[in-house]
Each structure stands twice: as structure tokens, then as C-alpha cells.
Image 1 (cartoon, rainbow, N blue to C red):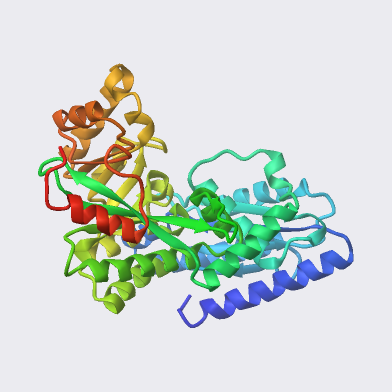
Image 2 (cartoon, rainbow, N blue to C red; image 1 turned 90 degrees about the vertical axis):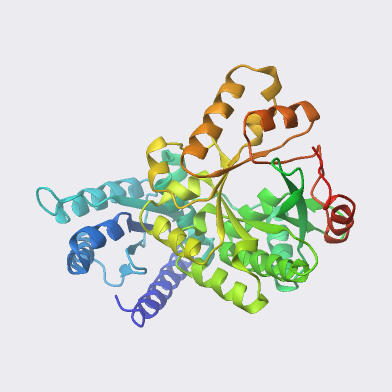
Length: 427
């Protein structure tokens, strides 16, 4: 689908979903939505040519049209993604039957022949019970479900029967979140990363902070989940990246520090991410080697095709790519061969009891060794005492960060901390 056609098709889909939801609300009925992703289409294109990939897409749409008997229910909404609307879903449990039917029909229709890799089909699902969810919230829930499916997370029948109504507190926080995003009211705090080879803090991580007017801090995890569930995950990432870039620009002439930001796993395969980072570097005039993107382990392996391609483009910009929270996801040694990363961050859960010896110590030794074999820099998170710092240095770890050196600090406090500590060895 050409770039000029895709937005039109997506607009038609949103209009059709909106109509189905409005009719369902009037009739006190349910509407289901499947998002269907051909996860390894990029590999098909690379291995067998784009003509074969285009043929697969045409055959997939025809197969889906054959499943439904209703007009305006099947749409191609992305490069390799389809949407299937199920209006008038009297029994929400029928959505599971629809998913099985779609899987079977597509697998049969998209058999490419002997010696050709099979198409991998992933589905996201949501049921709008009583059609009380707005259209964009419904779409966001389906996208979250698709992201979970790509990560191999199991879903039970209860997951398929829709989302509970949000509480009054959740609704109010969503309103405040939107206002904070619109009014540029979030903050970034900064935590130094200590280079164990020099002892100096030459890098830092930017961390989102959201403080309400009454002084209450909302956890970053909740803020990110709220952004994802309301369909504003990309908007939040855009705010964080631009704010961090602006800060990096201010520090570029006075402070020798690389700045890292976290990117949600769900955005790794988003084709707009590369353009966002590229444009932000240009707008703020930041040298790409002074900027890093930290992506959770699940984000690296969620979509090994378009996700890896997207990350390769980001790496070509000269930015550092870091695997965050390593060891807590779906680790596989095989993906190290091709993973487009420069840095590995060992999760705090492995560091907390490191000095006690035992399994955590042995696992950290292995992580450091394997990462170095593949040319990755290693960072240990959550260092809270001198003994752990010394042990990690002895194990060959490259960087550490944690409360032993500094908590995350607002910008003025971080600048003061760097003035006091930036030019000396801290180990």
C-alpha cells in the first residue's frame, strides 16, 4: 500500500469502527475488534522480494473478507497490519471463535510453498461491552493486546471479554495526564551513570516525573501505562525525547555527559520513531553520540523483523541503543547475534543480593561475559553500597548507577551534583 493510500484506509477504518460503536451503544450491544499482524513480512520481503510480500498482503485481505459477510469490516491499516471489526457481538465469547477462524483461514491462504518460511500471524483483541469505551480507547486496548501477543504472553478468556469500566480516580487521572501533556507540565529527573574505568560520571539517565498540584507524585510506570491505554504513548515519548534533547543541548558546551531516555517497548516497531529522533537531533542541534535510547529487553525481541529494522535505522543516526532491564524478559542467546544494540543494563533484581554470592553472582558474571563477547558495554542498575560497586568493578562491569552515588535529581540539583563530582573519580 502506498504512503498516500494507507492514511485514507485508516481513516475509513476509524469511521467504520466509530459507526459500529455508536450503533452498538444505541442497541446496548457489544463490538469486537481484531488487529492482525503479519509479523515476519519484512523478512519475506528481504528474502523473496517485495512482489512476493505484496502478493501475501493481497491474499491476506481477500482471506479476511471471506471470513466476514459484512461490508466495511476489514481494513488494511498499516504496512502489514489489518483490522477486523465484529459488530453486533451478542455473545462476547464468540470473539475467541473469530480469532481461531482468522488464524486458520490465514494460515491456509498464506502457505507460500516448500522451502519458504511460513507467515507468522499475531492477533490483538478487545471487546467493547455495551460500547461504553470511546473508539480511540478501544483501539488503544487492541494495540496493547497485540503488543502482548507479539511478546508471547498468554491470554485467557477473561482477557478477551473486554475491559472493565475505569474507576472515577482513573478517569480523573487520565484527564490530568492529558492536561499535563498539553501544558508541558511533566518533569525529567536525572541520575548519573559512573564509568568504572575512569571513576567519573560521564553519562546520565533522564527519568519521567509527574507531580500533581497537591504535591503527589504519580509513579512513572502508572504514567506510561496511562499513556498507552489512552492512545497517547507516542505523544508522551515525543515529549520526553524533545525535553531531553533540549537539556542535552544546554549541557553540550558545559558538561561532558551522554544523556539516555527510555522508550516504551510498544514503540520499537513504530516507523515514526526514527523520524522523531532524527528530527529532534536536528532541531536541538545535539550530537548523536551524546544521546542514547534505552529499550526494555521485551521491546528488542517483540518484533524481530520491523522492530530490528527500525532500530538499525536509529543506530545509523549514531545514537546509542541500550537493552534495559536485561534478564527480566524473554532472553534468548540466539538474538544476541543480530541485535542492534550497544549497551546492556543488568536489572536491579540481580544486583540487590550480588555480594551474597549464589545464583545472582554467577548470572551477573555470565551476563557481563556474554555482553562483552558481543561488543556491548555493560551497566549495572540499583547499586546501593560500596561493596557491590567494588565487586562489579572486579567483574569487569563498565558502568554503574544507583542510590550509592545519587538518586534521580531535578535539573538544578543534578547540575550542582555534577559541579561537585563531575571532574573527579568517585570509586
